[in-house]
Image (cartoon, rainbow, N blue to C red; front, top):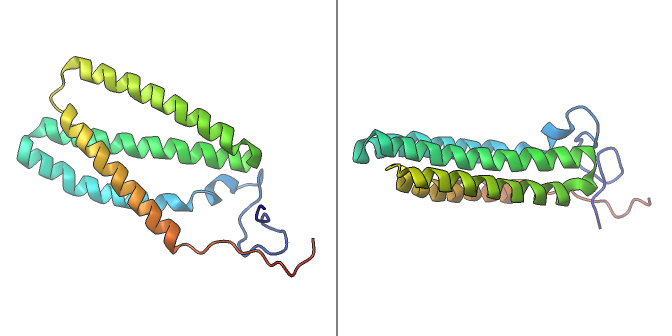
Length: 156
């Protein structure tokens, strides 16, 4: 069973329907908290890395956090776009986006590893930390956000 779209009986929000202006933006409210959490992580982790291990470490930490943010933003925007264009595209666009990102990230990380860059271990730790922070913030947002409700007493 799917929940009704905005403008249909029983839905408690007024988000724009697929194809309407603002439809993509309306599907991205979950981004604010994870972005703020990752920014807080960067504000703390980059200076600590610079102090403990030097500027190369700080660059690795900043790059790792940025990589996670960009990756999640690409996924969020592509799925929001698919939902705004036609909701049946969500699964295929999401899977294609995921597969493409994994291949590009794998090739890029292999290329960086081949250079012997000393900031790579710090980048790896920062990637793990940023994924945990993003996921925790996203979960917090999801648990605190009211779910749309369907009024079953309305006949369709």
